[in-house]
Length: 132
Image (cartoon, rainbow, N blue to C red; front, side):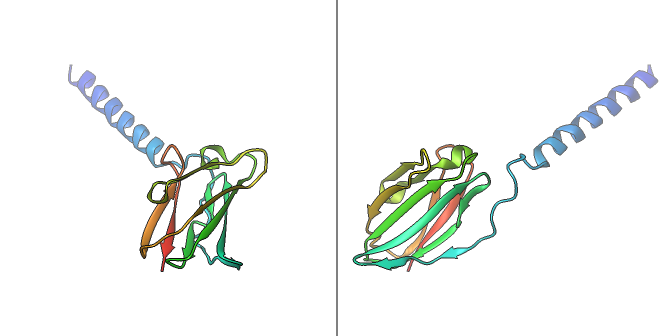
């Protein structure tokens, strides 16, 4: 009887370790791009911001713009981008879906300085818009 209890405890411990390893393993989506900051490119009246969806999230993950100046966001996706081909900025009412290699465009004016999160539709990937 004591031997059966030891075997059961051993199997349970092994099960917990296996589950822990599964949760800690990378998802196979690759490493996210390093935090980079993309400053807008001035173009007439709009601050032009380019964000590209990649298999590991967004490139760049950090974007800086100036408060009170209109922004033109150009969003595109690489093949295999998965759910990151959707970009949602709830604070600015933006939802874009990159299709067929064509850049999707949204225009908005960030009035208040701060940090605003953008993410995919499944909340798996995110980036930050910094309004200065």
